[in-house]
Length: 247
Image (cartoon, rainbow, N blue to C red; front, side, top):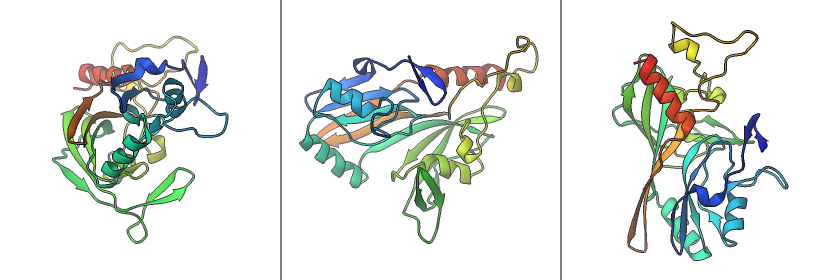
């Protein structure tokens, strides 16, 4: 067992994460609290390190934030990594994320195209003068009384792009404290019959921000790939509670 960001987590077996593997590619459903790349020398386990133990030439083709769960693409050889990199650079990899956001928002293919400036040290800001192009489409999937499940389709791939673009719409992702998102507690939505043991502190339903990389579509050498990743347990639990108590 290992502590990741204050959460006790078991380092997963890489093979258990795989949703697809062929001679050139591996696609995994990344669990939350596992970094995509090594964060520091000799630090916590990462997808890259697990992948290289599984296949020596493995290279992670893109990144997910540490708390974000979902689909991650890994190349098994340098040529495939080069081909996938070209597809990403040409914006031909279609990525769909699902997020639970604060408030009821009717997004019908809303385009947010606010430029993002990377300030370093994992900090970004909206900067119309100096930021780089950043475009995300948002579509509401399910409405609750106080929250909304949304589909997020980033065209570009800037750091924290979905998170900061949603925050600009006064629709911060649940639990995303960096962008003023608040966690959901059962006592908030279940007004009656909620009790907690004496001396115990209530924990949020989901102990991270509610963002999941749900779908990935791309083509290499004329072959089309389509993948979908089911919600992890914490994301599914949050939705189940909202459906029951906030519908």
